[in-house]
Length: 174
Ligand code: 2AM
Image (tube, rainbow, N blue to C red):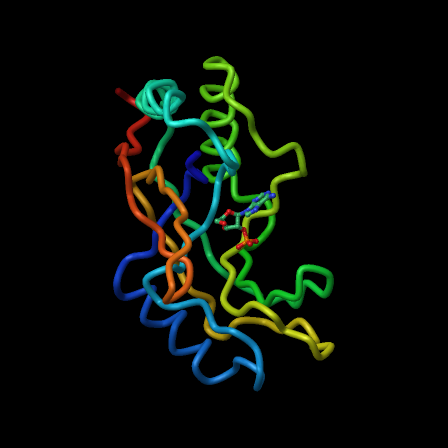
Protein backbone atom coordinates (compact mmCIF):
# COMPACT_ATOMS: atom_id res chain seq x y z
CA UNK A 1 0.00 0.00 0.00
CA UNK A 2 1.13 3.56 -0.68
CA UNK A 3 0.20 6.49 1.55
CA UNK A 4 -0.45 9.19 -1.03
CA UNK A 5 -1.28 12.87 -1.13
CA UNK A 6 -1.25 15.70 -3.66
CA UNK A 7 0.33 18.93 -2.50
CA UNK A 8 1.98 22.23 -3.34
CA UNK A 9 5.65 22.55 -2.40
CA UNK A 10 7.24 25.88 -1.39
CA UNK A 11 10.05 27.49 -3.37
CA UNK A 12 13.48 27.21 -1.68
CA UNK A 13 13.24 30.87 -0.61
CA UNK A 14 9.83 30.42 1.02
CA UNK A 15 10.92 27.15 2.60
CA UNK A 16 13.88 28.98 4.17
CA UNK A 17 11.54 31.66 5.59
CA UNK A 18 9.17 29.07 7.04
CA UNK A 19 12.05 27.06 8.48
CA UNK A 20 13.51 30.21 10.06
CA UNK A 21 10.16 31.02 11.70
CA UNK A 22 9.95 27.45 12.98
CA UNK A 23 13.50 27.46 14.38
CA UNK A 24 12.76 30.62 16.27
CA UNK A 25 9.28 29.78 17.57
CA UNK A 26 8.91 26.01 17.97
CA UNK A 27 8.08 25.34 21.63
CA UNK A 28 10.44 23.15 23.61
CA UNK A 29 9.63 19.47 23.39
CA UNK A 30 7.61 19.90 20.19
CA UNK A 31 8.68 18.44 16.86
CA UNK A 32 9.49 20.92 14.04
CA UNK A 33 8.73 19.62 10.54
CA UNK A 34 12.05 19.25 8.63
CA UNK A 35 12.35 22.02 6.01
CA UNK A 36 12.29 19.58 3.07
CA UNK A 37 8.95 18.21 4.27
CA UNK A 38 7.10 21.55 4.37
CA UNK A 39 4.11 21.52 1.99
CA UNK A 40 0.44 22.38 1.58
CA UNK A 41 -1.79 19.34 1.03
CA UNK A 42 -4.64 19.73 -1.45
CA UNK A 43 -5.93 16.16 -1.38
CA UNK A 44 -5.10 13.30 0.96
CA UNK A 45 -5.70 9.89 -0.62
CA UNK A 46 -4.61 7.71 2.29
CA UNK A 47 -3.37 4.17 1.75
CA UNK A 48 -3.94 2.92 -1.77
CA UNK A 49 -2.82 -0.30 -3.45
CA UNK A 50 -0.07 0.24 -6.01
CA UNK A 51 -2.43 -0.88 -8.79
CA UNK A 52 -4.42 2.36 -8.31
CA UNK A 53 -1.40 4.55 -9.14
CA UNK A 54 -2.31 4.59 -12.82
CA UNK A 55 -5.67 6.17 -11.98
CA UNK A 56 -3.98 8.79 -9.77
CA UNK A 57 -1.59 9.70 -12.61
CA UNK A 58 -4.48 9.99 -15.03
CA UNK A 59 -6.46 12.21 -12.63
CA UNK A 60 -3.51 14.53 -11.98
CA UNK A 61 -2.77 14.92 -15.68
CA UNK A 62 -6.39 16.00 -16.28
CA UNK A 63 -6.39 18.89 -13.80
CA UNK A 64 -6.92 22.24 -15.52
CA UNK A 65 -6.19 25.06 -13.11
CA UNK A 66 -4.24 28.28 -13.03
CA UNK A 67 -1.05 28.76 -10.97
CA UNK A 68 -1.76 29.78 -7.40
CA UNK A 69 -0.52 32.76 -5.46
CA UNK A 70 -1.57 33.27 -1.87
CA UNK A 71 -0.49 35.04 1.25
CA UNK A 72 0.28 33.06 4.39
CA UNK A 73 -0.95 35.54 6.97
CA UNK A 74 -1.42 33.68 10.26
CA UNK A 75 0.05 31.11 12.55
CA UNK A 76 -2.59 28.96 14.22
CA UNK A 77 -2.36 26.48 17.06
CA UNK A 78 -4.64 23.50 16.36
CA UNK A 79 -5.04 22.05 19.82
CA UNK A 80 -6.48 18.63 19.02
CA UNK A 81 -3.99 17.49 16.40
CA UNK A 82 -1.38 19.46 18.41
CA UNK A 83 -0.03 21.37 15.42
CA UNK A 84 1.32 24.82 14.71
CA UNK A 85 0.32 25.76 11.15
CA UNK A 86 0.81 28.65 8.78
CA UNK A 87 -2.50 29.43 7.10
CA UNK A 88 -3.39 31.55 4.07
CA UNK A 89 -5.78 34.49 4.14
CA UNK A 90 -9.33 33.18 3.77
CA UNK A 91 -10.99 33.19 0.39
CA UNK A 92 -8.12 32.59 -2.00
CA UNK A 93 -10.07 31.90 -5.19
CA UNK A 94 -7.21 30.31 -7.15
CA UNK A 95 -6.43 27.85 -4.36
CA UNK A 96 -10.11 26.93 -3.96
CA UNK A 97 -10.50 26.47 -7.75
CA UNK A 98 -7.41 24.26 -7.84
CA UNK A 99 -8.62 22.14 -4.93
CA UNK A 100 -12.03 21.66 -6.60
CA UNK A 101 -10.51 20.79 -10.00
CA UNK A 102 -8.16 18.27 -8.39
CA UNK A 103 -10.83 16.63 -6.25
CA UNK A 104 -13.21 16.45 -9.22
CA UNK A 105 -10.54 14.66 -11.28
CA UNK A 106 -9.87 12.21 -8.42
CA UNK A 107 -13.59 11.49 -8.02
CA UNK A 108 -13.94 10.91 -11.79
CA UNK A 109 -11.33 8.18 -11.44
CA UNK A 110 -13.10 6.63 -8.43
CA UNK A 111 -10.31 7.60 -6.10
CA UNK A 112 -11.00 8.18 -2.40
CA UNK A 113 -10.63 11.68 -1.02
CA UNK A 114 -10.69 12.93 2.52
CA UNK A 115 -14.24 14.00 3.37
CA UNK A 116 -13.29 16.58 6.02
CA UNK A 117 -13.70 20.21 4.93
CA UNK A 118 -10.61 21.54 3.17
CA UNK A 119 -8.55 23.73 5.50
CA UNK A 120 -5.44 24.83 3.61
CA UNK A 121 -2.47 24.88 5.95
CA UNK A 122 1.25 24.24 6.18
CA UNK A 123 2.16 22.21 9.25
CA UNK A 124 5.26 23.76 10.82
CA UNK A 125 5.46 22.02 14.19
CA UNK A 126 3.93 18.77 15.51
CA UNK A 127 3.36 17.51 19.05
CA UNK A 128 2.68 20.97 20.45
CA UNK A 129 1.35 20.30 23.92
CA UNK A 130 1.06 23.69 25.61
CA UNK A 131 -1.81 26.00 24.72
CA UNK A 132 -0.61 28.78 22.40
CA UNK A 133 -2.28 31.87 21.04
CA UNK A 134 -2.79 32.34 17.30
CA UNK A 135 -0.81 35.23 15.85
CA UNK A 136 -0.28 37.17 12.64
CA UNK A 137 2.67 36.24 10.47
CA UNK A 138 4.54 39.52 10.02
CA UNK A 139 5.32 40.10 7.28
CA UNK A 140 2.90 37.79 5.48
CA UNK A 141 4.67 35.29 3.21
CA UNK A 142 3.75 34.89 -0.45
CA UNK A 143 3.27 31.33 -1.68
CA UNK A 144 3.36 30.99 -5.49
CA UNK A 145 3.07 27.57 -7.10
CA UNK A 146 2.80 26.47 -10.69
CA UNK A 147 3.09 22.74 -10.09
CA UNK A 148 1.19 20.00 -8.28
CA UNK A 149 3.11 17.12 -6.75
CA UNK A 150 1.95 13.56 -6.15
CA UNK A 151 3.82 12.38 -3.08
CA UNK A 152 4.18 9.11 -1.19
CA UNK A 153 4.73 9.31 2.55
CA UNK A 154 7.20 6.71 3.81
CA UNK A 155 8.21 5.91 7.38
CA UNK A 156 11.97 5.59 7.79
CA UNK A 157 14.18 5.24 10.84
CA UNK A 158 15.00 8.94 10.52
CA UNK A 159 11.31 9.90 10.47
CA UNK A 160 8.74 10.40 7.74
CA UNK A 161 10.09 10.95 4.24
CA UNK A 162 8.07 12.39 1.36
CA UNK A 163 9.01 11.07 -2.09
CA UNK A 164 7.72 12.69 -5.27
CA UNK A 165 6.07 10.25 -7.68
CA UNK A 166 4.78 12.73 -10.27
CA UNK A 167 4.44 16.43 -10.96
CA UNK A 168 1.86 18.27 -13.06
CA UNK A 169 2.21 21.87 -14.26
CA UNK A 170 -0.61 24.24 -13.38
CA UNK A 171 -1.85 25.84 -16.55
CA UNK A 172 -5.56 26.53 -17.00
CA UNK A 173 -5.13 26.74 -20.81
CA UNK A 174 -3.90 23.15 -21.29
P1 2AM B 1 -1.16 17.57 8.45
O1 2AM B 1 0.07 18.31 8.07
O2 2AM B 1 -2.25 18.45 8.95
O3 2AM B 1 -0.87 16.41 9.36
C1 2AM B 1 0.93 13.96 4.69
O4 2AM B 1 0.64 13.24 5.82
C2 2AM B 1 -0.02 15.12 4.52
O5 2AM B 1 -1.37 14.63 4.50
C3 2AM B 1 0.03 16.16 5.61
O6 2AM B 1 -0.14 17.43 5.02
C4 2AM B 1 -1.13 15.84 6.48
O7 2AM B 1 -1.73 16.93 7.09
C5 2AM B 1 -2.10 15.28 5.49
N1 2AM B 1 -2.98 14.32 6.13
C6 2AM B 1 -2.61 13.28 6.90
N2 2AM B 1 -3.70 12.59 7.31
C7 2AM B 1 -4.76 13.23 6.80
C8 2AM B 1 -6.15 13.01 6.86
N3 2AM B 1 -6.69 11.98 7.50
N4 2AM B 1 -6.93 13.89 6.22
C9 2AM B 1 -6.40 14.94 5.56
N5 2AM B 1 -5.10 15.17 5.45
C10 2AM B 1 -4.29 14.34 6.06
